[in-house]
Length: 103
Ligand SMILES: [Zn+2]
Image 1: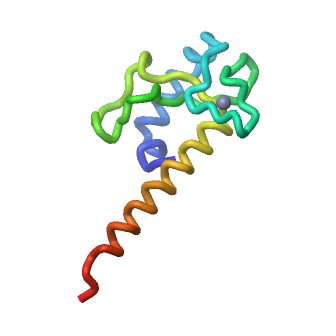
Image 2 (image 1 turned 30 degrees about the horizontal axis):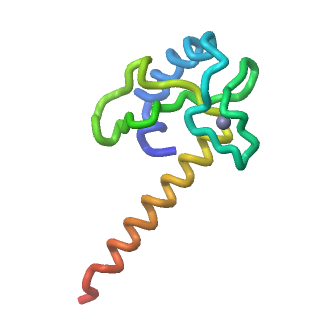
């Protein structure tokens, strides 16, 4: 989870998008993680999160996604991908901080 995903704007968006996506299931899992037993497809009745399509990075574009820019990802796959990304960002920040001269 990023701060963006905690924002009221994103919460309101997923509330709108979720039933629309749900009606379209089965859909490909956007954060498919075969190591977690993901079949690659989100089936009706499975727990899913509203996820961004690959390549849509709200951090870069600075706006909310449209409904065509989101899809479904299993909750377990999405959380795993988010945690991985957050860890990568933390490691990058740490590496940068360690390169700073220590006056
Ligand atoms: Zn999945």
